Length: 489
Image (cartoon, rainbow, N blue to C red; front, top):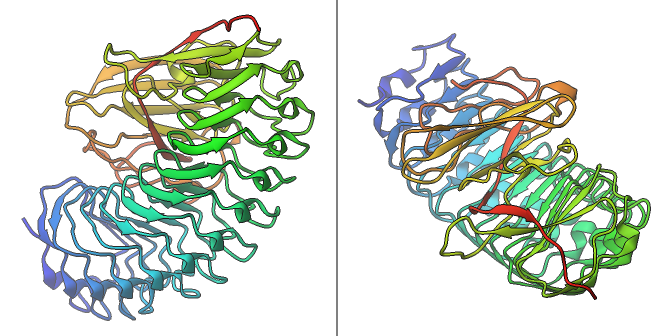
């Protein structure tokens, strides 16, 4: 059935604080009447996910006086069409909104430039619009001083976005609380902006940057290796950008460069040249545990300086296929592996992950958990975690990876999961070891019976289980890791 427009009459629900309509067979339009002044004066949480709503997002919902106390709006996994209403960010509505979750719909049009006006979204911490059909460029205005002062998590992946990464997003006044930027699987172009690494005042809280499967070109920015340019960055994925070429920058391994980086994914680009000895110097890349380089044109030997110098118990480097010019033996503490497709047809191969392989060493805190099945990637900031993966096939397989307090993979359990193709499901994460603040867990796709939205510290959950922080990253293709020896130099 449909939702009653008359519920939006002023006085109908004066004390209602939470409205959960998830996982029903609701259809029809979202009522514009719900945006009337005085409607739902106490409503804080509105869950509309996993239904069959159609039509556009009502502009009236962003009018002054509408949803004065609403802090979370989730309409994930519906059939909504049309554009993101400009008035939602300019009309004085949603004054307390923290989480706007519109993933897995059929939304079109551009990201509204007007949403970058000063204090348009003064309290917004999560903007999740992935898995839609949005097009156009990333608005430079979103990096204007005063725009999105609290925004932490931005999911833009799997849309049709084009153009460059705005240099304006990389100034000391822009996006001061950004923690998670996921824009993989779009059509973004141009060089990676050097300004994003110009000082430790730019993007000081960024922890995860996923930019794979776009059309970026040029060299890796030398400035990104400035001391403490990215002091909190844990996961950087620039893979599957064939236009990225040139050498690995020496500066990325210098003192205080990427001090928190756990995983660096550079596979399937056009990188060439020798591996820089500077990446083995003390003080840079101190936390690096996984480096993916397959599918490039790198040459030379693995520098002896890389021996036993990374903060993790060992450094795993995916070097094959590709990189036919690499040679020599691996220094102590470095494990060289090859990523091979699990199917005979081959094709593009991305790195499968720690949970699917038995590599020596501890599972690093802050790493993104990767599944060996054809699935989404989900992250965990805690050392004790349970993460479930849902595959993208017609009969997807779930894989549950349990990491104990010591950081080691404790168990991997697989089970069949019904439902159709989709974007994967993260059910719980965080826990032992303190977890971490921020982050958003949402389900999308094959496991349609569950939608979880858990933001650490808020105690909010929308029909899901678990707490803490789990966030989506780019997908991994089917593959296996096997230890490999390089030819002699």
